[in-house]
Length: 150
Ligand code: ZN
Image 1 (spheres, rainbow, N blue to C red):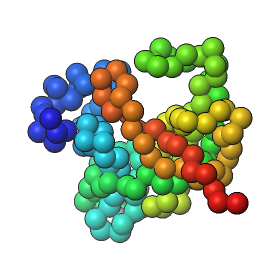
Image 2 (image 1 turned 60 degrees about the vertical axis):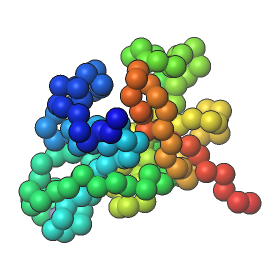
Image 3 (image 1 turned 30 degrees about the vertical axis):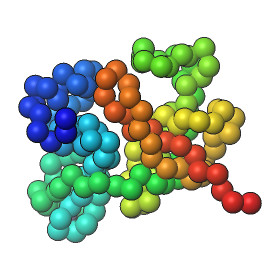
Image 4 (image 1 turned 180 degrees about the vertical axis):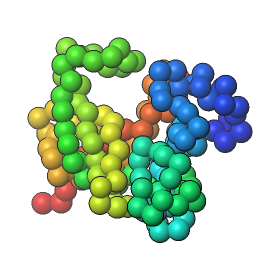
């Protein structure tokens, strides 16, 4: 099943508890195809996230969900010692949450978790790539740290 041909009702059912609305629906449909779609202005090229109907730079309504590469740099990093219940998340080990500044544009940031490394190996400025896991029956975009060449 692809993400683009399901109804709004099905989309809401696939992402219970998420902020699925008119502006973000295309983003969540993209997740079902494991594509990270963020809003980009067709008039001035500015990206923004979370999705809004209007370009924050030039106020154009001509914004289109556009796929990003998902590569970037860790901008902010927190460890959650408590949080909402989530499949596969056990807060006995603090759960990392990172905000990654994506390569497409300074200030374009996306927040998720980072997998595959111990918490003490996560640092601001580390390079990341995008990966996908399944959580609660829907694909979730996550980050992995890129090992930098010495
Ligand atoms: Zn614009």
